[in-house]
Length: 351
Image 1 (cartoon, rainbow, N blue to C red):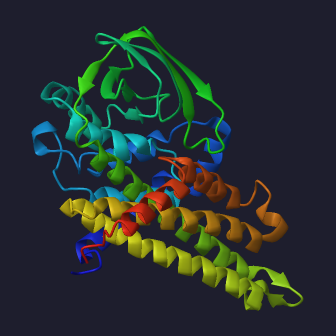
Image 2 (cartoon, one colour):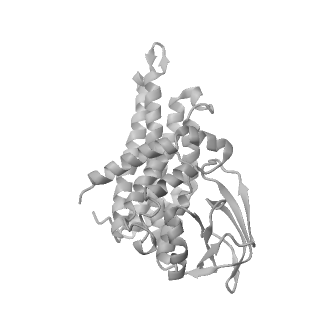
Image 3 (tube, helix red, strand yellow):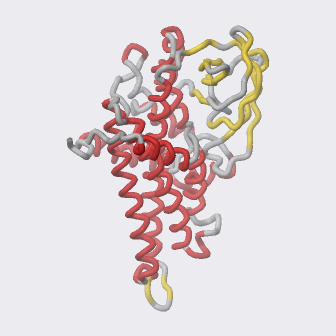
C-alpha cells in the first residue's frame, strides 16, 4: 500500500493550515483563554472550505469524501490551536450519519454540513428515561454550551435530544483549556428520539483518529516554536540550540511525533476503508499521539526556560490543549489497554 497521502491531499493540508493561520492565529487562541469564546470565523471557514460536509452523504447536503479531509483539517486545527467545536465534526456528525434514523439524518445532517448547527456527545451518563422523555444531568460535556443537538446514552440506548427545548438547562464549567469549553446539561423530562447503536464504535474510532491528527498538529507547532526559540536564545555566548541537552530534547520530541504520525496515517487509511483492523489502528494512534503531544508540550515549555512559564509565551496554549485532548474520549491508558487486549487476542494490522 502507499503509506502516504496523495499530492492532492498534501496540498489540501497545506492550504488548510495556511487558511487557519489567518482565521485562527495564535493571538486568537490567546484571547480565547480570557474570553472562552469559540472562534466563529474559523468554524465558518471550515464550512466554506467544505470540511464540515466532507464526511456527510450527498443525500443530506454533504460531499461524501470520507474521513481523510477531516483528518487533515484536524491536523490544521491542532497546528493553530483553534477554538472550534471539534466534537461536532469528529464524533457527533459521523454518529448521526451511522446511527441516526432517516428522519434524524434529514433533520440534522444538512445543518451540520453547512455549519448552521453543532452537536455534542455524552455517552457516559446516568440519565433516566420514561417513554420518549429523558431526565437527569450530564457533565462535563465538550462543546455543549452552543450545541443545537446532543447525543446521549440512557438505558443502554442512544438518544438524540434537541437542546432548544425549554426543559434543557446548561451551566458553563471551568476548563483548563477555554478553547474546549465544558458545560453541564440538565434534562427535565425532555423529549428525545432513539437511535440505533449497532455501529456506534465506528464513530468513536473516527473521533479518536481525528483527535490523534489534532494532537500531532499541535505537537508539531510546539516543536517548531521550540526550535525557533533555541536558535535565537543566547546563553554563555551561544544559542541554546547548540547545547546537547537542548538538542536531545528536540530530537526526542521529533521522534515521538513521527511515531505517532505513522500510527495516525495508517489509522486514517483503515478508517477510510472501514477495515477490520480499525479498532486496533485507532487505539494505537490514540495512545501514540497522546503521548507525543503531552511530551512535546512539557518539553517545549522547558526549552523556553523561565519565559516558557509566563503568559506572554505560547507554551501554555499547547500545554492546555494537550491536557484537554488527553482527557477526551477516555484517557490514553484505557486505549493502551484496548490495544494490548487485542494484540494478546492475536489481532494484527492488515498491512
